Image 1 (cartoon, rainbow, N blue to C red):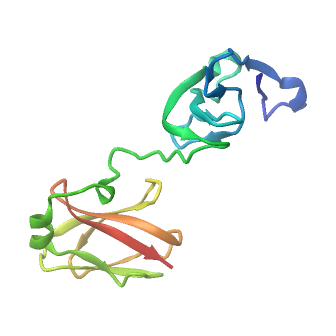
Image 2: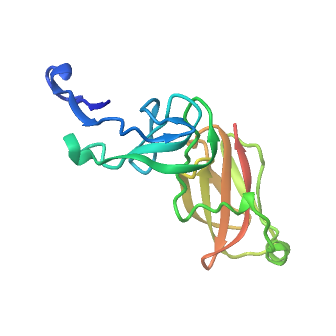
Length: 187
């Protein structure tokens, strides 16, 4: 059984509402409700206790009762998942995932030859390159959250001290075309 609680109720236990009961679906094992995770798309994804290939989804977790729209075994995973929740990053459309794919943009990279340095850095990074033009610099967290979106010139420095430490991804854009991208380590 899957229950919803109103976390703003005076007595939280008394706000319990049944929003779904296991429907008997079987895929490798029973797909009973287990671990859950609120994703960046605002939905709650619910895993299964044992080895499984399906996730349940609560599409509108902030709506009360059955309006929260629980969909059982809504998502079939591409592989078998064992005993837990898979990592479910949410990538907005402007996030460039080309760092994970083969790209044929070598001619663009050679023309611009743009990088951020120093890398790693804790406070300031500069755009190094041979082309003196206005570029848009976008810096993302590894899960696709846009952290910085600024206009920058080659040779100009940008303050990144307020960004979180760790591995970051950057895109350098000119006229809506990604002309360079890479990884930045923020100390």
